[in-house]
Amino acid sequence: MPKSIEIRTPDADTLRITKEPYYHAIREEKSIFEAAYRAKVPVLLKGPTGCGKTRFVSHMAYQLKRPLITVACHEDLTASDLIGRYLLQNDTLVWSDGPMTAAVRMGAILYLDELVEARKDTTVAIHPLTDHRRSLSIDKLATTLKAPEEFMLVVSYNPGYQSIRKEMKPSTRQRFVSLGFKYPDPKVEATIITKESGVNENTAAQLSQLAVNIRALSERGLEEGVSTRLLVHAARLIHEGIPPLSACQSAFSNTLSDDSMLQEAILQLCQDYF
Ligand code: ADP
Image 1 (cartoon, protein in one colour):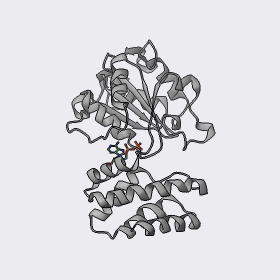
Image 2 (cartoon, helix red, strand yellow; image 1 turned 90 degrees about the vertical axis):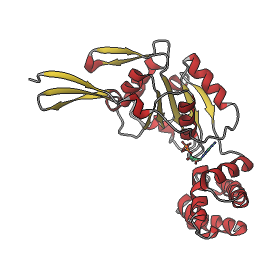
Image 3 (cartoon, helix red, strand yellow; image 1 turned 30 degrees about the horizontal axis):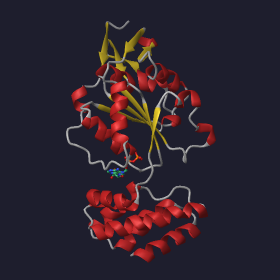
Image 4 (cartoon, protein in one colour; image 1 turned 135 degrees about the vertical axis):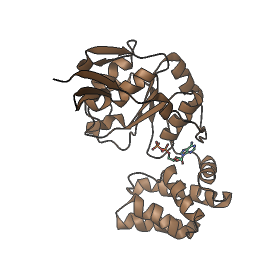
């Protein structure tokens, strides 16, 4: 028999963001997020991969001075992974808080990235945190935690990426207010590229225009257009001295598609610009 039970939870100070993450606001997402935080309304960030959702949450966590706990959801992620589990260490039974329990205890911002990827039982755990109860039930500790004022739940969802099987159910979706994200317009995207990579404005403008054209290839079967993240990656290679065409070929044509026709089409677009 174990001699005692110990509860382990992370230190909130290690989860604080100490340096302001650069985030270029696109519309009124900051004021809506702040209002949702004050009003204790959970937020759903909806948009394609690499368009700034994660960066936005870390920026807001910094602004609101809250610790941030991020979970990249995947198909094996269960409610227990989020809530916590017992471990036996020597003669001590240790309860180790999962990220959701830790976030509730410390009044953090909990960001569940791609929530629909997770197992279904995770939604059961989330629901009481998203309504007037604002509570988390931990059966294994025979307790229910009431979320403090500062706790906020944020989830993300990429509508273009999920299979129909993994669409977010209305009963879950309607618990959130949604902020729609899309790739910024070329002028703003060029500013972000310059700031994030150090390339000059001219190169950044060419990359952002090239992105507009690559994204238009969705009509020819390209599953997802080039993300802002990938543009920044290409720009960083250029900043490191890689010739722009080689950088674009590595970052775009090889990454975005395995289809040789599409790769060729992307490469041709790159050649138009570099
Ligand atoms: P997502 O979470 O939507 O997949 P990220 O937030 O990780 O995407 O964004 C990917 C990268 O794109 C960031 O690391 C950053 O370099 C850049 N980025 C995209 N949008 C913005 C923005 N509005 N302001 C600053 N950087 C941005």
